[in-house]
Length: 145
View 1 (cartoon, rainbow, N blue to C red):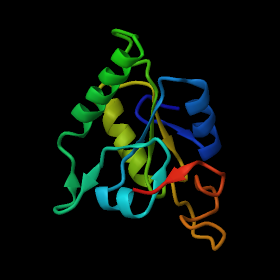
View 2 (cartoon, rainbow, N blue to C red):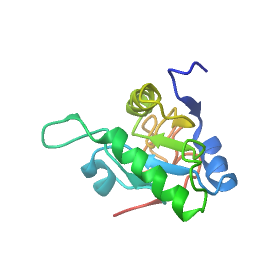
View 3 (cartoon, rainbow, N blue to C red):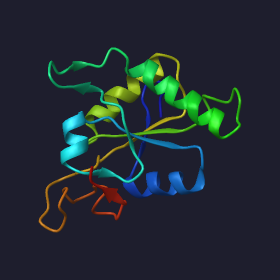
View 4 (tube, rainbow, N blue to C red):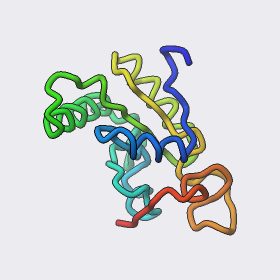
């Protein structure tokens, strides 16, 4: 994958990475309302890419992700190995996480991934939050606020 695009992961690959890499962070970039009212992946941190009320791109997005990584590095006693901490971005369908990942890479962050089908994926009756290639379809743990 090009340096300008985050690496795409399926929901299962993301789940494996979270299990294999203790420092990996799952970041739900949906709006605060989507995160709280629609359920979210278990253990995900919510840092909206854009949010209500004005629906503008979060001007602090990159800074918030950098701070999140610094905190994880400190809690894992990794010191300065901040860019080695994988950030896995997830949104509803994969579109916002791709754009947000591009912004992070452009700002110099590395080890950026995105869940290509998002949390909800394509609608399906079998799953409350979607189906198809979505996280809930593949059994990603989820929780409600």
